[in-house]
Length: 167
Image 1 (cartoon, helix red, strand yellow):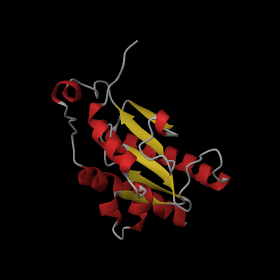
Image 2 (cartoon, rainbow, N blue to C red):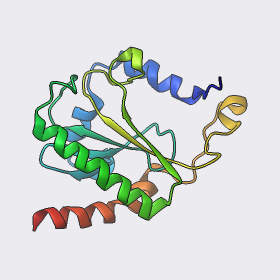
Image 3 (cartoon, helix red, strand yellow):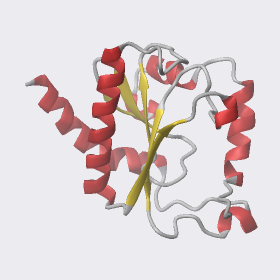
Image 4 (cartoon, rainbow, N blue to C red):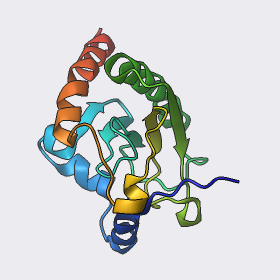
């Protein structure tokens, strides 16, 4: 069996476990979506860039309401979240041309959730070789662009999606 380690995430996980406030609820309170890294606001959910990404373009979809339980979420939240997964994948394919995706939920601390009280869905673009020796040997994760560049690259695609929804 092979194991994929992500030692760069340890700092975030330790910090997240001590956090008193929800990162998603706090992001929603910010007036500036760019500062909050919010790319899209739907009716029930929003799309946000992960501040501690596994790869460039790592997005998350979360409901506006603070819900820990995915299985108890109202149907309209789940339906829209699923549609936003499709939208995010389509946009990431156009903008980054990844070779694959990881999409999923980490529900509960034991499942690896850094934020346990507000469920969210990860959409992670993947490429062959996007895991390399740097995190293990150098305890450093190398990204091809900073978060604001990712935001600026993806926002026009999500703006087009907003316009479609307005029609």
